Length: 596
Image 1 (cartoon, rainbow, N blue to C red):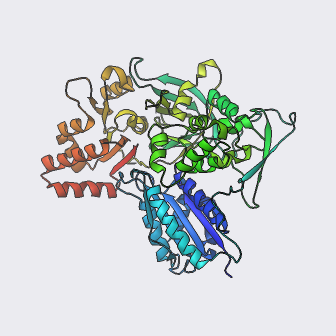
Image 2 (image 1 turned 60 degrees about the horizontal axis):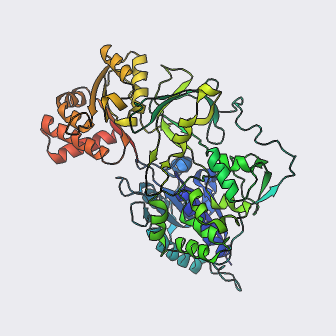
Image 3 (image 1 turned 180 degrees about the vertical axis):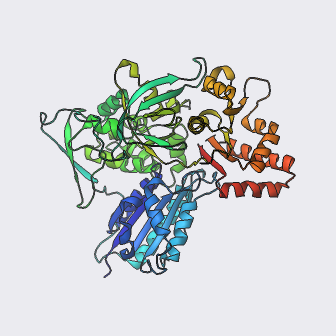
């Protein structure tokens, strides 16, 4: 009988693809498969030719790029010299997770499905296209697709004689067992984030503990939004970067939340423990020290402030000793209960900690070894670097909008990383923040004679500040910036810096202060008003155009403004203007970095 082995490989940016991959892993265990669930870049891709049954789960990031943890795999898979029969013994299926409000919806999943097919793979099902924009989220596509997938797989690999599918009423064992150490065997939280002599360039597994130099508010005190310009000292880290690159920051939970969590689950924060994998071959979590204290686990690893996913309620229901709570948890984890779950969790942005408060009987019965199955790890956050090494050697600066907003819950919602960063005060003692740098999506021209048109409303101006500093340090002119915010007196970041560069002839600046007059004025209006200059720079001087900022309506409005420039100044028809912009994108002369 054929060996019943399944490999689930995922490429995940925010954790949704990983969560889905782990769900498939659990469903495989219930069907008595030997199943491995791995990030695509942790898997030795040379073994792929020996795999018989693989499910790929992959997200697509903003501009149609693969997630960070599948980039190496992606490059390998698209090598020209791979023979077309490389994967001819593989049965496979691809599940994509995307957002249909972006133009390149599920681009990575579609491309992966097609490439594996080209290499001889046999698809079990058409590619699944999960969509964040659907009322019920990606599960609306995933649930029926998985039912069909298991039908196909069990037809190829029937259950061994005498075995049944393990009922959903039976709890699966945890991924790790947790062994408490004797009270006095370890000093709490020692050796945690001491700056060490770097072994290699800092990365997610080995971040650099950078000293925070300054944390300055750059919006008026009376302005509704708190935006910070934060500077870190990276001397001795080995980090190098250029304009357009991104700094990744690993945030942590606040002490009040950690204390509440430990009280709710009746955990002693100072107890130390060791983790052991339940199944041989399972790797230990890379970012947890061994031994570790409960306090360190909850502060630095468990994402207790994220909005919990459906899988959280499913696992929680197994621990429930209270019938009312168990029924509600089961409803939240059923396909029928997804609308209810959405209005309980996603719409008001309820956190994992708050959800645990609502199920007190169940929460106090959660065995500690299940914590790592129940709650995902804290993900690093990306910030555009807002400074240049040429202007500020050994320093990294970022522009951080502190995320705070109201939902129907009484307590305001707060962004984990921005709130934590804003709370740190380097004037009251040394503050260190774990960080590393990765290449950004935007590349600026290396030719001093190529002008750049930068459109950066709000904190979208951050990468352009780095680019302008870099160009000025080399004595390059030809930088043109369209900046937009609400009011000149309240949120015009770096005003003095821009004005000085304008005076010295390094910068042409156009500003749009949307609330400083009756009718609202945005960057797209300023582009249209200055259409002669924009046309001139684009056509006579081969300028590059860059756009960064919030992805709601802004990118579409800016694209429209650029098209109207092409039509009014260049006499192009609407379809020619659209083609012209597309050609600029394809030749990297129009680049954008937007986020939601």
